[in-house]
Image (tube, rainbow, N blue to C red):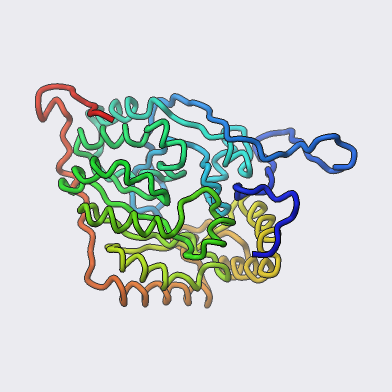
Length: 360
């Protein structure tokens, strides 16, 4: 990686706070020489608490396999510069930039709310995606254990769930996941975007290493928990060439399947990503931005369902061929079971009592 600027915020993905589209006013530091202290500093992470009335939300996008998603956290300290969830932080009055990484909203009451929703007689049992937005195993989970408490509820109700994470903290909950897997209630995808540690540190500064993520795939599958690899997002000109190697490494560690999506820089993410790549990889910046635009019809993002996550054109076609070739070579014959939606039973229906929580 080229030498960083003096004002580069180490340990953060975003290097600025973009303007919140929902706010009428914002501040900007236009003349640094006239101000005694910088307005924007690499401050510590702050945690805020929110108590929603529901935790499971219906997914309207036809690009997503799951009907439901749930998110115990908003904002994510992992700091992945490309994260599509950054834009949602603006709904909370924050920026999609540095605020997204250092102002984390936690939902400590999530397990109780989940229980209430599953007890509703009109509840439609379908797999829930955990999480649809930010990583449910981000660093704060080690302390708050919200994700674990929600898994306990899902196991108690025999409710299916699909999980995606890039944090080895998921191994802490291998006891619950093993029990769920025996009942065909869980499938896990581990996200790996690069095997290049230098690139990971810049692009996903507070995530676990690729080596650790491969270990997660291995340990979960050894425990009987079907686990695949998600090579997402693929960024043309930056990590796209790594896809075959990532899939091969994941297969060697027991992965049962693979998936991918192309990066799309919608909303404020376009500004953040362009600023980041110019500061982190200035020599490659123009090429990468040009190729991202090429796979999205001349723009850095495409909102059309069915096309926005796969792109179009020769570069997108080449990436698709790389993926299919790697899967056919390294994952042929491996399948993950379908989640069982018929196993669902409310605790009172199964044993006549409402013992909803096991030890954490």
